[in-house]
Length: 97
Picture 1 (cartoon, one colour):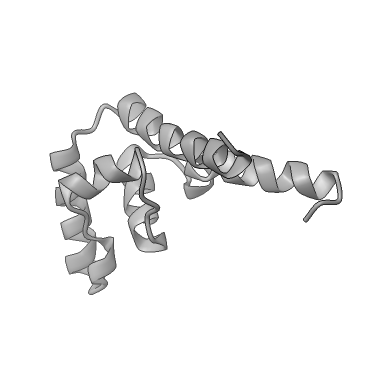
Picture 2 (cartoon, one colour):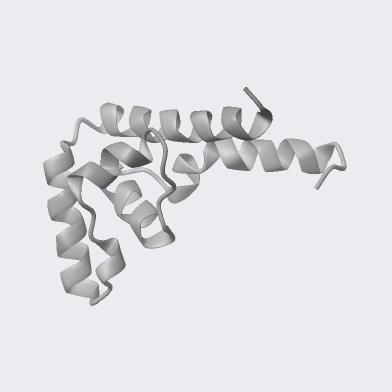
């Protein structure tokens, strides 16, 4: 597996772990997303249950959807991005980025 695949896998696994730690169901996340979309007028906050599980295995969420997930899991967005940020920080320290 190449480094990009390793990074994607770490990101997706981190999303799943955050959901499991939070104990929130995909149905509750979907409802929260719908509420955020309605309150803000930004449709991008809405999430389908099937999208949530895809983000944990293969797809990349948009920024509004990442915000919805972070709110649902009660963690900062940067915590969900940790695998990516650690890689960027590591490469920056090594002069690669």
